[in-house]
Image 1 (cartoon, chains in turn cyan, green):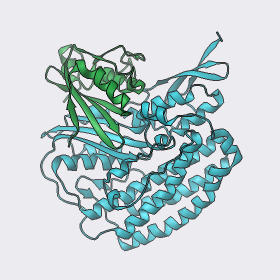
Image 2: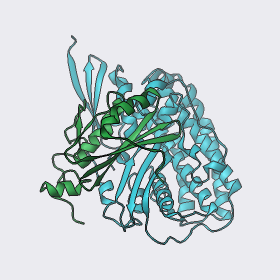
Image 3: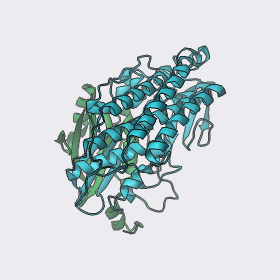
Image 4: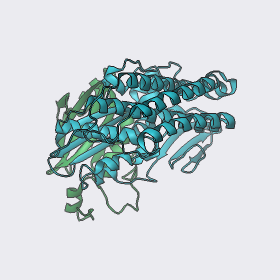
Length: 359
Length: 127
């Protein structure tokens, strides 16, 4: 039997913006097993929701993660609205969709920059984050701040978009699309990127189902599942198909994210074109009661909330299952058999969001 | 609202999960909620976009079999059940012994099972 070595990968590592550890068990240069170790930043959010007022828990939801903040508020608001039987104005549904897609764009571009940096392409990293800056400008102009925007609330949205904001968005989307057109061929065709990603971190379609993969990790393995197809917010009125790749490797997962940036631009354009007039917020009275499951598509995949309320000011239970938590077992599977040098990029290929996992 | 719920008993869990695995259902998560005398457990599955929820209740001292023989990925939510609620899981192959997300330094054990913690004399968070 070959000699085995255990290498702690993380909790501080250049590819991890947040702390997580994988204990890698190696035989020479090959990984034979990996054990994830969490708990470096657990904040007890699920427990806190059982003592906080349910309206204040909305702000707690936004703070689960700095990158997916808009998605968490969207899911939480939708879950409470379903429990309380609140019908959100159509215009608010479209605004939520626009902001959710802007959130997806900034998240995917953030990931693309990190991936470029991990591969060693400093210039591509800077080009990608320059494009992300355009998205952050759009978010800031339309929502008032760049990350914690607080635009989505229970019953609708706190802000509206006027003609000037819509024009600004359309103008900036053109800039962004041009930037993405320049970046896309590098991600798809560059020989060095292909060498580092093609055939690396394999996850077959059958394994993706068995191991519970979600989001671009699942779609990169040929699974055409996207929670936006459930039709929440305005997605049911915007015709689109999930981006799917069948190469089942890091390259496929990367291409899904890059192509989804173009898809988000199209979805925002369609939402602006169809944006109905009217109010954006309805008054909320009473307290939630009952049980609900809410599933939405975060940039990293399916987010699942289970809420139980008994008509009190606080929730009885708020279960948060984030996409990265679901993608951890597939990641353990992907790194088995990989070379140690490929582990950082494979880990990055599921777009780990540790704040979401730890919650 | 909570739809597609199938009420089962704890003893039927493994057989039912085996059938779902055979039919290519995906395990989404497991949710536990503390109720009077024990826990309400919901196993969330999906086939395509359609969900299926298996539901049953257990007492505080009852053990739940691990479903990892059919869904290896279940070791994540099952370790969470141990951490957050103190639920006993039988035959869990990757057992973090209540140190998956919480640590030895966590002041509150089983934070999502306050009644169980209070009954065992463990410190609970103030209301």
